[in-house]
Length: 137
Image (cartoon, rainbow, N blue to C red; front, side, top):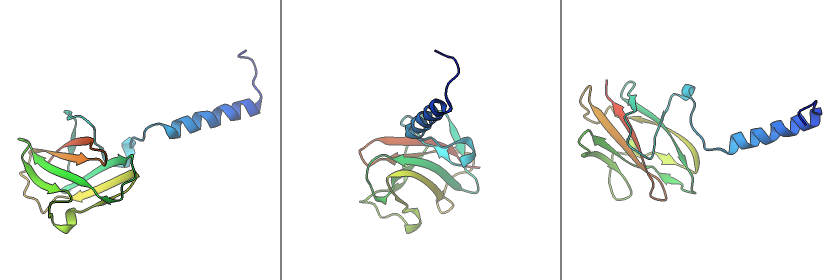
């Protein structure tokens, strides 16, 4: 049963393993340079680099519009709301699409206190809410 396998059988098994690997949920690797957002508020912290918040988000549904998100302070007060009914500065409007998205938000125009914690809250197309805790330098 576990004896010598033909090269074709090994190739077929490798293709099946590759297909399974590709079809699993996407998560950015450690070298991607972007933070992962999650469905729960966790203690994991992303540290801003030059007031830039780089994060990855996978949109599962067909949605081609601007990302809906909020920036919250550590007391969960909304500092910036980006949604269809708000009027944020245009540099905060970021398009996203179905599939993998990498965002790089420049937060230097927001008045964020140094050394404080903040939250990014992203609303997906079907109402799921994702969070990322970050800290200013």
